Length: 303
View 1 (spheres, rainbow, N blue to C red):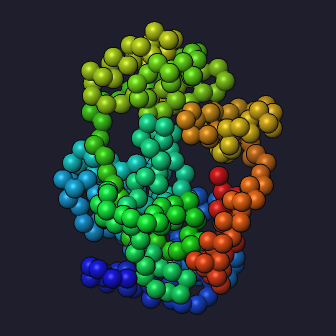
View 2: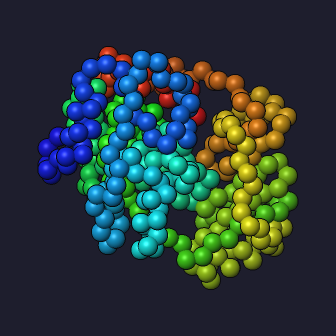
């Protein structure tokens, strides 16, 4: 790692990971079973926590990967900003990035990977590696930092990240009704979320109050009325296309614009496209040839 002086916390983190033996980073354990369990002989370490650097005018923030998403959100809220990370109680920044799951607002706010600008991680040989850059438009070549999003820590153990931030909306409102979710998507300018359970559609609007009120009026004309919030999400995620293919009879919730659905019972495990599987194995062999980082976990089975 070159460039700025390496913080002592990162050096200590790299030393703890070391160059040998199976090792994994543990965060809030909110999604600890995703992608499979680590082998029993895996040594667990924790990433550094805390806010490292934050200038609201830059709309970027540098944080230790062990920082809770709730702490991050509270710091950003003080200056009217937010990061597009799921607010999972007890989860860490590094954890939600490693799992890589967007929240229900991905359609309007963008994907989780779009929030990550720079990452410092410990490679399989114990070295600290920096990928990406601390500003929005200064990266050329391969965008390696976003490759870490959703990798479940199998390519590198993230110790510190720089995140892009966005203005916090001045006003927001949820509405729901027995209306056509496709029509809502066509007619509304920029909803942040549309959910549908086969009968009822939920839509989330956010922005300036006058804009939200105008969009809410249009949503009401299509059959929606204001509600307190979204419905509870069923426990399991599947590709939206699997609902029809597998004939799900239980409750489900489709997240429009993302290809994701939620179901009450676990869905089948789909075989990945052979080309995707081949690329996955090539990446793993290049980044972690000894399979010491989060052994036992597989991003290919973690939707």
